[in-house]
Length: 124
Length: 107
Image (cartoon, rainbow over all chains, first blue to last red; front, side, top):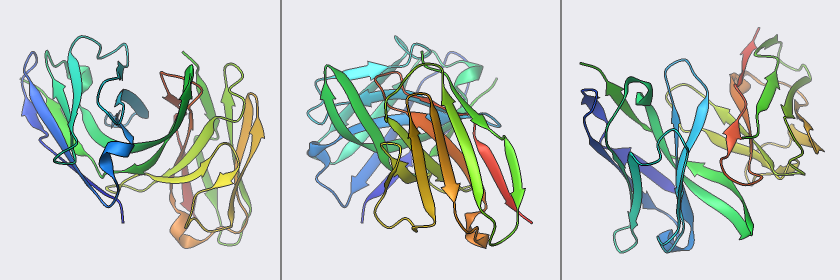
């Protein structure tokens, strides 16, 4: 059974930093791209970032580009998201997701498994 | 970015009803569309991928259809456990975007 368990959320001041983690189990972690998706309170879902299975390819939503960094440790089956220069609008529940599909020029990958998420609150 | 528009935003129906939710893309996404079910405090769950493929383990009362810009999620016979918010999402290249969600209430 696939399990994705996020941690690292909390209260941080505007301009602050936070590192989110996601512990994965139940599948061969290095074989799959992984993504972060967030949901702000009362809002819809927003795709944030994706990383390839080997960790060499990363993509970001424009709203977080230059401030967030996605990474992974395949030896530990861990996914990370470093959040810097946090803004009020970054407050959300952050979900990690197992991403499946393929890339052929364009990438066609959907989000097969999700964690419950970790809450990030940005406030002074 | 491709915009995804879902309707209705809320829906109230009775057990046994047939329910349809619509998702419209701002440009053609072929069949690169997924549907998810999300209950409060739980992990979202994949229901349908590639517009009409049922994810393993998902009850057969859920079905998806459509291509291009118009898509539907149908629940053939509503069950009490189906109370949730349903999201569509395109994956026709990044950035992936989601519909705003349809909150389904069981009467």
